[in-house]
Length: 99
Image (cartoon, rainbow, N blue to C red):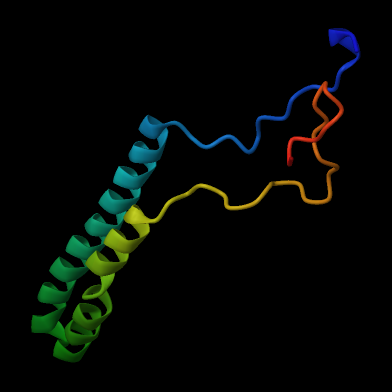
């Protein structure tokens, strides 16, 4: 089989590089922690205006650090192929990539 007749190789299932993965995690964690700190500060100010509203905001922002850690530590790699139902890749020896 000539090179010009072969189908192009799909690389859409490739995992992101380590630097891209780390940048995504740091950005996500930073955004969630900024939301937590701003919400906590607003809750402190609201406590003097409407104590119940400040208390509700404190209760809502309390689990944000835990959520930030869980989301930042979760992998973004896919577990399955992006396009299901495709035939297995054929190798030159006549077998498939699955064997």
